[in-house]
Image (cartoon, rainbow over all chains, first blue to last red; front, side, top):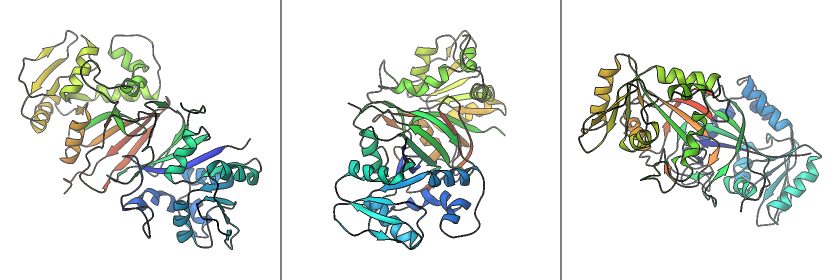
Length: 209
Length: 209
């Protein structure tokens, strides 16, 4: 059965984007730093048509994660980050469903990725992604509010949290609007050679009350 | 040369104590959960004169950490936690220097730990601890404000951060009063079998401007 997996990079002090995010600066001040570990990985570079980079367990884990993704769901902010930066070569070889408020035609990239725009909410986007994924995983690529929404709705199977050893001091918190005093997660795989800690977390599956 | 090492257990959302901390509830609501992993370790239990518990790398790492501590420094809140709970058997076999505002006589426990009270600030407590440690490590046992003070003063050599897979939602943040937009740390050892991630972090050694 397909799983819903979220991947997020977070600072030591809990931020997934720096302050003053938006416009031409979608990750905020210092927010780029949270993703720097990715750009060094050989598997990430191959996905973008580049050579070089670091091989090893982190690179393999990313390759596996991307390879198992039969479809991707993301918020509109992430799409703006992705679409500006990735050009014709997004790292996903799978259809991407973008949550938005404004209907628009699919955005087809020449390397084979198509961004579809979904205007009727997360559960609808997830349904379309599941249909497209054909029993592979659905990857939830962020941002924070979309991931939180999936967690609190009890829809997320696993959070792959990459904790980056930097303090941003301000910005967008991943766990910023907690409605519950206490939520226990299950932590499984832990790894990291680059200095980044990769945590795989299983949220509680029931809908929190 | 002796190093200054801090150990802290932190929730996924960045809290080192739950909400409404104080009085008979020094770790706040849910805050006890952050230390539960410790109580299961064989080395922790031995330190408290108990049998049983889990052997393995986490237990060994704790034993090593406590064994290398030639002296301990803590804030007064931590002392209240420790003194109530630990009775005659604190886990430290070393002098403990407690930061406080009110002078008082040393508190001598029968198992060999003595708590000394220091009224003239962190740097003075650290100096006394270094003298007592005789080239062994000085352990900074918390709370959050004392650890932050040591970090921002450029005094801390290593933070051993234990990230516990639970969301507390509210409480005392470890990195709650950051005066800098951006602080890069160096992450070294990462481990964890209990589900808790143990990160060893080296803060920047210069005094941040």
